[in-house]
Length: 203
Image: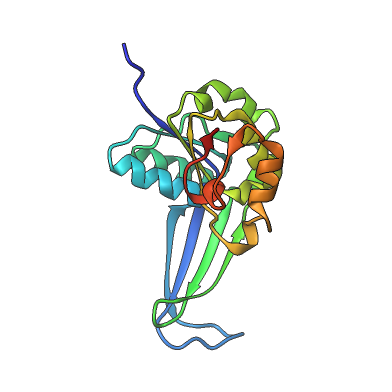
């Protein structure tokens, strides 16, 4: 029987707190607005869209054993994402993203707290999921985990897989991704932007 194709997402899974101002914003002052909470995170968002399109998607990430962690997990399951592989870090706070929108709906500022995926995710977590990662037809991820973990993930992938990395923000993007990717994976052939948003191709 043919293997059922699936996608693995590795990266951010957040609780997003969004504030939308009802009037022109006065800096360094309280502003009236609407505040909402939703599940977010670059990779989790990609996984949700893929799941809603009918794909079999499995998410690898780290959440806390707090209220937001339960919220993130429940939101993933409600969207059709397989969240059974999430790592729950005891005593850690789940990652959060805060955005403030001006009266025109444009983002004035955003702030992310990704410490849990950078500091509380065990070094052996992704290697323990090697079979799951290597069995995926597509691996989608983001650099919010930190460069070391991203490199570890790419070491676990195989040349036949489609690898997509969403840059998410300028702050989380290494200064020269192609340079270090080619240095660490000489068996892979990358176009200038392949590591970030296209397909990694073997020679």
